[in-house]
Structure formats: C-alpha cells, structure tokens
Image (tube, rainbow, N blue to C red):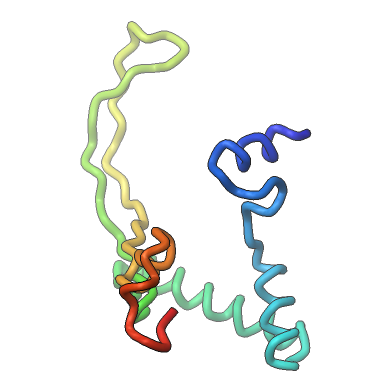
Length: 121
C-alpha cells in the first residue's frame, strides 16, 4: 500500500481514487455528451485560462451554486526558519487565491442533500 492510499483511507476516502484530474474530467464529459475528447479538453483548458486571467487582473470569478474564486492579500508577518528556529524571518505581503463554495456545493460535500430544492442535487 502506498502512502497516498493510506492518507486516503485515513480521511475516509477509497484508496487511489481520492483525486479527479483534468484528464478524468475530459473523459467523463466526453462519454456523457458524445463530444470528442480533444474538443472537451480545449473547452476545459480555455475555461481554466480565462479564470486564471481574470484572477490575475484582480477580478473575482463567480459561478452560481458552485462558488467564488477571489484574490485576497495576505499581510506580511514574522515567521521562523524551521531549520533554525532561533532565526526570525519576515514573510512578505502576497496575493493568494481563495475559494468560497456555494450553498449547493457545501450541502453536497457535507452530505446534507436532503435540504436541497428538488432537481438541484
């Protein structure tokens, strides 16, 4: 058993299937829609490129019922070098991308799908 499999089992996930890749997404959409994988891959890649470009411009990206990607700024702070704890290091201000899940996603992830309106779960 690999380390990744063990981590998955600890979190209650099936071993070796705790991750969906872009390739998995392409294959699944292709199978369900009948579109060829190359076309699906191009659309997914363009979508991700546009999301990245918007975030780089400082714009929030919102998908109703899914969630919001937003750029926030982490203030500078004082930290310690883990290899030499007596050494104080200043961690500079930086921008980070945060994701806030939408209501439907939150409820599906937590397993509270009984409170979703009909047709949304």
